[in-house]
Length: 130
Image 1 (cartoon, one colour):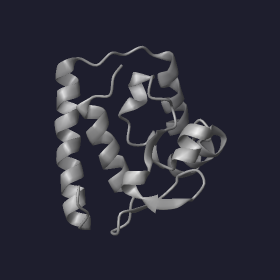
Image 2 (cartoon, one colour):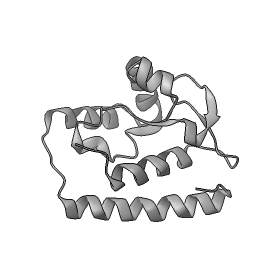
Image 3 (spheres, helix red, strand yellow):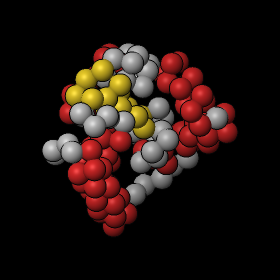
Image 4 (cartoon, helix red, strand yellow):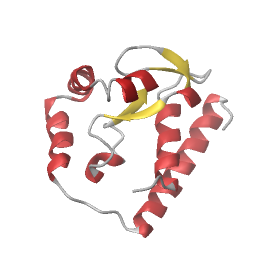
């Protein structure tokens, strides 16, 4: 699936959510710091599993080293998910790997609009320019 407006706005929102008021993110798995635009939206359950693709608890700001070179740094990411949200949330997210779901164009449009609004509000609130 090609990158959609929903993916773009959701990614921007997650990275802004996880940044401080100066736009600095801390990698969810290694604690490396950097500007939000230089970070990725790391998915614990990989993006190809559509049931968790737009889950805010499944996604966090992650440095490109952990997200790409370490393929998500899953061992550490699992510990973070369990610590922050509990074993039940972890298990629920992992169950999405066994489910097949395909978003409609209408659903993706709604997701894009929702996260565009949320991202712009958050950027304004933090004083960060998009």
